[in-house]
Length: 159
Image (cartoon, rainbow, N blue to C red; front, side):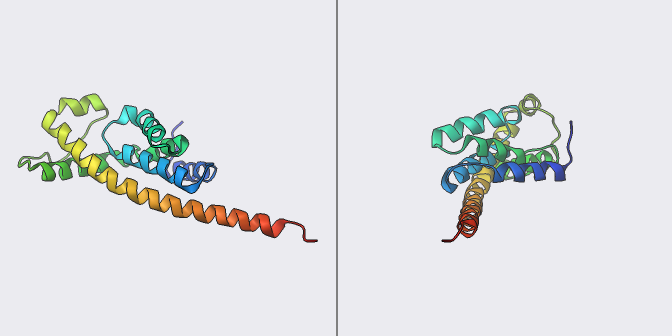
């Protein structure tokens, strides 16, 4: 069943709060998931994010949640930004004015130059957002853990 952006964001927040592990472990997984969600590999994002999280010893659950950044509303904007940045970094003179596609195979049909530009742009944008996601997630989970400890301390019976 299709859920709207608000419901999906709400679900993501609830599931994110339920993640277990130390803040570094969770933040590393989230960073990997966000990084992968920006790259143009739609049908493989969750699998790649989980595999990378395993390799860097981050939270696989957080990585899977991080891929939720990639959705039907954000994909056109993100992929177009990837493409434009990739063209600029690679020095391509001729660029497309818009990109519309529904799958990785359609992306490949646009040609190797377009695909390469999207991958290069996606890696750069994904790396920036992944690093930002790491620090934000780390701070959020430090705060969540501190609040939980404070509640535990406050709720203990006093002698």
